[in-house]
Amino acid sequence: MNYGTDWGFTHTSIIHNSCFIIPMSNAPLKISKVVVDRNLCIGAAPCTSIAPSVFQLDEEGKAVVQPGWEGTDAKTILEAAQACPVNAILVYDESGNQIHPK
Ligand code: SF4
Image (tube, rainbow, N blue to C red; front, side):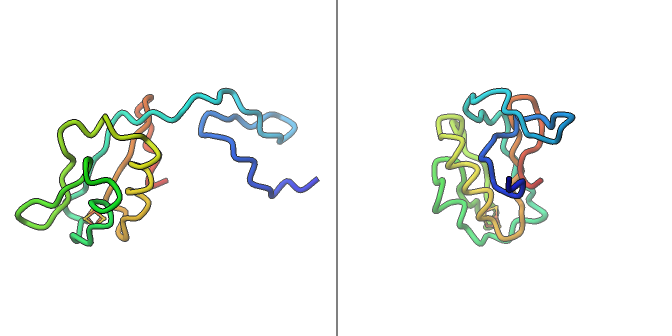
């Protein structure tokens, strides 16, 4: 068996004693908080292209999380965060755990 395979399980998985990964839930990812680190942001703007309802540049050329961002699906928000070249976007799940950057 190839244990190096990507099993596609979510962050809600646990590692069992036998080293198998057991999925605990297939619940969709929910994001509780999105933060832009203004000290890191360089205004490169892929975030605003991917998720314009979540990120917009302000007058200083820094991304700002927009009111109502919660209406955007988690996959799009995570995709935008992952596209940031300097990892300036921090994403937290519903338990308050930082899920990006890891
Ligand atoms: S992708 Fe990153 S660096 Fe570019 S504007 Fe967004 S937060 Fe800032």
